[in-house]
Image (cartoon, rainbow, N blue to C red; front, side, top):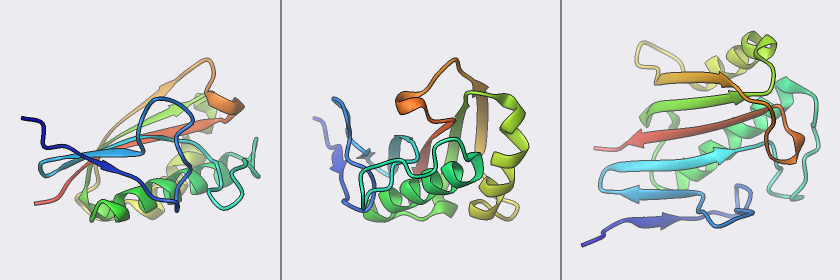
Length: 130
């Protein structure tokens, strides 16, 4: 029996393919990767500005988590996809504003050859609410 719940909010970009913003399965929330689309305008207003892209991505994730009844401090795992690892420190600086304290999530960060809509960063996450 599948007891998963689709999570959808208009406070984050709508999916552009056959996926959902997030799925809640039991006490876990699996958030799809977010890119720097502004949900109010459905456009990327900061393309090429890695700090602004990262801020928009994390705000999008925060909105999806909120709709699912979670907060950023419920996140247990993130994956960061960068088109240039030289941006790692800049992304890390913004990331650390959202994830503070001793219980920060486990994380992977990888460089990829490209991302949707030519953005520089994409982040997904898993949260646990219990």
